[in-house]
Image 1 (cartoon, rainbow, N blue to C red):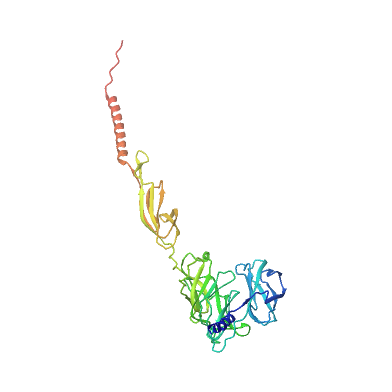
Image 2: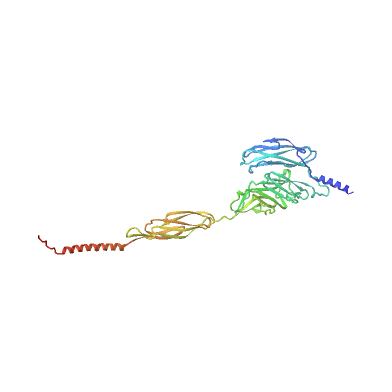
Length: 451
């Protein structure tokens, strides 16, 4: 009796397992038309800035049963984000023996590098999940696929009809595997307009980014996350919510970070309040340079935002310790001496500001600039400036340098005492000579004796 019960249950379990079919045995490519050249599954297209090129692939489900089809495209290069590859229909169901067209479009913006680009087409198909039987089961009322489109790359996630909960954990990348969305098993996804999960979740580069506040900087691009539903998914959810956090991983270029960056965070834009709100990071992930993570429970515009340190005060220079030194007395001649004709003037210049700067210290004598020195000082640094003035003429001088003032005097002195003594000596000598001569003349002359 146990065997009779076990066998039907095993058969039922096998029937409930999704069967993946090879594209060659189920969905086949009938034709490829349009722009570019196809080589096997690779599309080669030559494109120039501002152009749009497209190709149409006609598909045929050669199987007798319906198949869920996933079409994806893998470009070799997106030219640093200047190229956008899009599929008009990437996830759909084909009934047995039916045909359908899928159009692949590539758009080049004005900064695109002209040239030939390659993209590889990938087609997957599988038998759709079975419809729920009486009493539900299987996670609650059957399942369908939620398409998650990250910058053009689509990943399908199984989700419950009845509860809008994901039936698997999934990491959804973009084409370059640089940006990710991670959703855990059992996460409820709700579009408020329909009260259940939308048909697709999309991440796109925002055409315009909301302004960031002072003291912050936008790093890279901002991204719009939206939910879509309805015919051809042309209707947008006003906001998609999750009952538990999903993880977003955004790529950024470390070379774009300002030098004054203090911290980095993934933030969402609160349109009602007009502010950016930082998301808590995913602390369960290993930190990587060039990757920023955030935990969010609803869709919005998101971006990597850098918080900047307050700008430092500009350079501010202050002078101190003015010192004036003069040479000692020097005799220029026997009777004339000069004191202090060679002058050395020094002062300290300090940068009390918060940034490096250059200061020109001017030396003024009696209000006239006679010399200048240039100094470059880092914040908090000081340096002495020195001026040497040789052979200053005698007189009194007012000094100004680095906001400081002082004075000095160059004096000339004459040795009047020596001059007076010499004059007296000369006078005495002259008087003595004259007096001696007169005395000699007054002496009587003796007559000369005859022989």
